[in-house]
Amino acid sequence: MTTIYIDESGYTGGDLYNPQQPYFTIASSLIGDDGAAEILRRCFPRYQGAEYKFVNIWKRDTHRNGLRTLAAEIPALADRLFFYVIDKRFSLIVKMFEYLVEPTFTAGGYDYYGNGYARRYMNTIHRDFLRFGSEDLYEETAKRWDAFARTPSRTTMDALREHLGRTASSSKHPISTIFAMLAEGARRFELANVDLAAFTDSSEIQLTAVLASVVHWRQRRPEDFDVVHDESSNFLRQRDVWDTILRDDCEPGPVEMGDGTSVEFPLRVRSTTAVRSHESAAVQLCDVIAGLGAKVSLSFDGREKDPFMVELIALGAGELTFNGVKPHEDYADGPMPRRTGPDMLDHMVGLLEPHFKRRPK
Image (tube, rainbow, N blue to C red; front, side, top):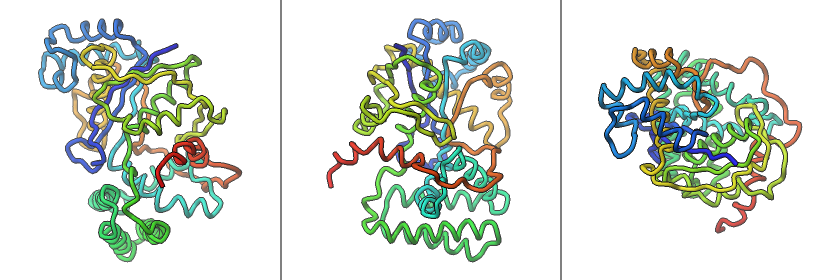
């Protein structure tokens, strides 16, 4: 049995269009309390707080210097650490395509998620948004979808459709093509969802990130898991979804993930336990790694690179294994694969079928 410790940084609930905290990160670790305590004491010998918190470390130069020590130790710890990062604004664009465009691809016989195609496709969309459109267009589109996702109504849908249609008619290819596709998808979405107010939980990222972290470890470790997380995290407000995904009586076998890799189900998580972070050095180490991951992501997102972050990367922080929902330069360079059977979405719907049956009509 192995324990996975988890903590997070940058959670803003359903508010994904948040200029103050554009990234959500979750760090997970296989390092127990004793080992984590030794690492934290060694890296931050002058820290006096009741518990190690990245936000406090970042405020003082004496503590920030300890991040250099931690970065230098990461290569030796890299096989026991992982962080998952979500670029919130990019995730809004991704979700918009999943709801408005993916159904059309599927109806046409294509496997949008097959072999990680969706990830490469969205990288391409992101590139074209900025190369042939503008940063302002990208921001405005993310904001319009966020407004609808947070408050689904005829008013917010009309505002979204007006933006999509106007951009399609006033732009050149490829922006006009992208937005014409989105505008048609929004029209079909509205026809298929008469009660727009029932469109809920589309901005969920927390449980998704925790699940992705467990999947990462399952792909690499054979033993059963216990999961320990900070009690302040509210990812288990969807406890029924979590328990349904983790149940042992699901159909066994490999399930393809969005990045093109696969994982064997059931995931064999035996327990999920909330602890007080000040009582767990292992969770505190995750807090520090998650905070560091958020700062690194912010520094390398196209803005001017922070020299301190560049230094930490060179010292060893760059050896930290990560994944997530973030644009990369891995673009779609061929046609979308055809469907040859159930796709990733079909597998996940089947996995969650008991949950859907329990939901009130």
